Structures are given as C-alpha cells and as structure tokens.
Amino acid sequence: MGKYDPLEGHLRRQKAATYDMSFRDIERLLGALLPARARRPDWWAYDDAQGSGPVQCLAWRRAGYRAHLLKDDERVRFERIAR
Image 1 (cartoon, rainbow, N blue to C red):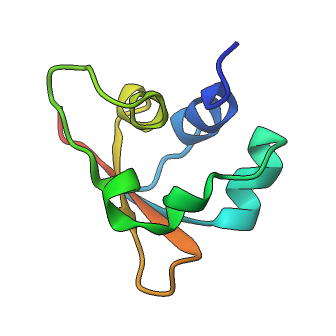
Image 2 (image 1 turned 90 degrees about the vertical axis):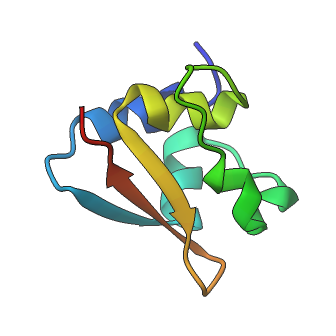
C-alpha cells in the first residue's frame, strides 16, 4: 500500500464535482504529516494526462480529480476531471 492510497480511496467515494480538504484532514487519512513542500502550489498542481508524475499526484488523478492549493495554504480543493 502506498502512502497516498488512503487519500485516493477517500476521493473515490466522493460524489461532488469539487471537494475541499484541510491539511489536517488529509494528514489524518494518511496517518502521517504532509511534507513541508506541500505548502507550495506546484506540489498539488502537477497535471500530467499521461498518468505519470509524482506519487502524490497519481493518487488524486486515479481517483478522477486534480488538486489546487487554496490561498490560505492549509486547504486543498480537489476538482473532478471530466472523462
């Protein structure tokens, strides 16, 4: 099981087109702290339609979402990708 698999599973169960989570909520799911670089927008915004990329991005991409760090730096918005 990969570190971000619990996040992928959680996102797969969501029905909303957009879904916001705090860092604290994500860390509870993972059972671990997010790395310090997760406070940078580029850690979340990686968008590769080819299915490759950083391991954290693959988790939400496989669940059908893309991610954006919100301005307060402690929340993330997941937006469903049209398929």
